[in-house]
Image (cartoon, rainbow, N blue to C red; front, side, top):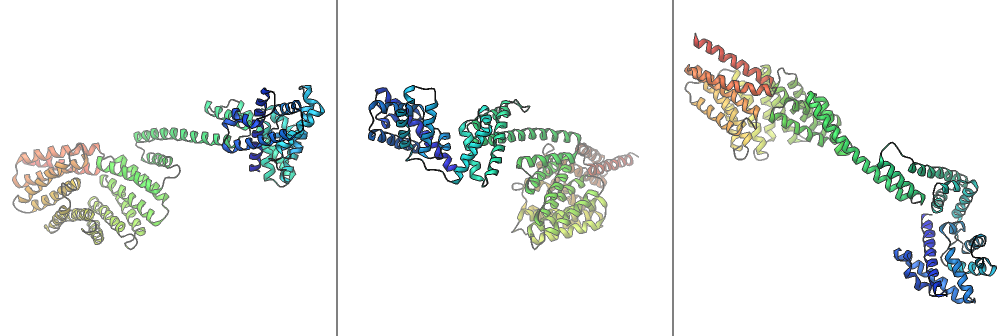
Length: 595
């Protein structure tokens, strides 16, 4: 029916164009050369090529009838004048069931009843007009089928019921009413159902017009859109009206998204001011969902978590680490397969481990171990060897820190075992950077065990592990990692130097610390800078015990004080407690030296 609707509209437009052209020819006093007059008609100029071709053919049919009719010039002129004044509309074509004779007969009755020139209403003039109109339309009209009969009945019922008049009073055009009825006739088999549907549609059409006139409480934008929709609907251009609604909805959604983004940004800032990590994470995830246009995938959440993990680690921001923990919990809740579960648990364990390293107690670290062990149940060596090796190293880190905090050497042994597992997959050829990192972490675990044991065997194994890492990590290729390895190397050399005679190892330790600080200025890595300062303070105590020179105590106190200032600022409670214990030791040594 849509094609038929467009066809009827095209024919009606062509008739109007030809009628205007015919009227132009009357200025010369004769109804001739109608086809030639088309080029001067504005409707013809604006029309697309198919519409121009239709009008040209119709003008030819009209001209052929005039040329073949045995009429006087005056009778031809009057017939053309009536045609120019009363061309059939799309509604006339529809009501005439697209039958040329029926349409022409109905138009004849309309002219006869109209308040117009008496010369138009004579029987002869009306007969001439009816024959002219029939001849002009007949080549282009095809009588309607059963659906069109339903359309005619729907239109008659709408007229008899007064519904059509109700729509016209709202400014809804005849064309729009016909389009509604035609659509429903084409979609419905039963006439009774079609009539009920049309009545409902006409009620809706009236409401659209009333909404377009009524000022809403939703602002000028909505009111303007509704006014435009009402204007389009009056002409039956429902598709364009629907498009206007779609465009308005898109603009409204974009404006809503902008408002939501601004509110979320402010909410995140306030949650951070309050120190509420759970709420900060909730709002950050909602922000990610908004940016994704739905639920953000786990990859986006893990990337977000990684950014907070990095800032918390590098800048020493405990709040960012707590936020990273909470975001990882959100990611875990959205995991849909073993790989995603493993990734979420690994991210959670990393945040918990870094946070647990800075806090007193072991609860976070124990939870980190559980998270990594959970990740290993999803990332097996057979299914994901590289991921498995990564989690093994992370598990080793958590065990190592847990061993340091708890003083239980079994955790350090577990860390060493985890690192050695990781090295089974991480070779220098396959993953040189991570191979070096794993050796560096292995050295740290060995050093922690060596500090708790007699002799220097474990400590020397730690030195070997650090030096192995430094064969791959150079200052030029990996400056930050190189600096970290230098600090750890200095720690092991310091402990060996404390247990052996001479000062060679102590000199090597001092050089390693200086090298680390050359790449770790306070402004760029405050926490790491403070840790190195604390280690330098410990080295000065070793020098004091070997030399009994008070100068070393003064240096140790100054270095430990610098470290304490940073640990307070970064809420690194575990490290703060250690450096305060160190300062207490320095005070006791001073008192002992003074006495």
